[in-house]
Image (cartoon, rainbow, N blue to C red):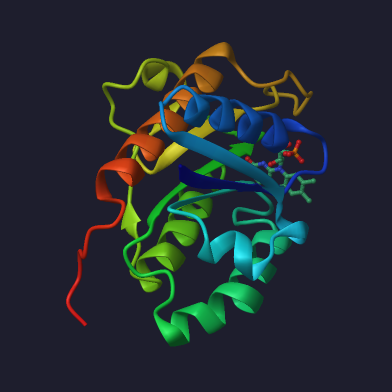
Length: 187
Ligand SMILES: Cc1cc2nc3c(=O)[nH]c(=O)nc-3n(C[C@H](O)[C@H](O)[C@H](O)COP(=O)(O)O)c2cc1C
C-alpha cells in the first residue's frame, strides 16, 4: 500500500475537517491508504513509513500553528540531518478566516510549510488551477478554504474548498504511488 500521512492542527474543527476530506480523497486512489493524525500525536515512525506527507494548519497571526512548527522542529529536524525524508512526496493545506479577501496570511502559511518540505528534499505536489473547486477556493500552493465571513463569524468550509481538498488528497496519492520505490535524487 502507498501510505499517505495526513497531519493537522485544529482548535475549532475546520482544519481537521479538511484533513478528513483530504484523507477521503487519498482513499479514492486504488492501492493508497491514508493515515490521519493530529500534529501532537505524530511519531517518527509515522513520518518514516509514509510515502507521502501532507501537513495542514489553521492560519494563526499570518503563519502556521505552533503544533505544526513544533513537529517540524522536533521530529523533522533530526530527519533533515539524516536525509531520511528525501524523495518522499509532500503537500500542504490550510484554513483561515481570510479577513480582507487576500487570504490574511494563507499563502505565507502554506509556503512556510512547503519551505520545510523543500528543506527535507521532498517532492512537492501543488494544486493545479484546473482542479475542480480551485476557482472559488484554491491556491496553487495547496488546498485552502475560508472559514469565516467578513465579520469573522464562522461559516464553515465552502463546498468548493472541500472539493479541491478531496482532489488534492487524490493527487498526492497518485504522485506518491507513481514515485514509490524509485531512486529520484543523487546522494
Ligand atoms: C489566535 C488566532 C489567530 C488567527 N489568525 C488568523 C490570521 O492571521 N489569518 C486568518 O486568515 N485567520 C486567522 N485566524 C482564524 C483561523 O485561521 C480560522 O478560524 C481557522 O479556520 C481555524 O481553524 P480550526 O477550526 O481548525 O482551529 C486566527 C485564529 C486564531 C484563533
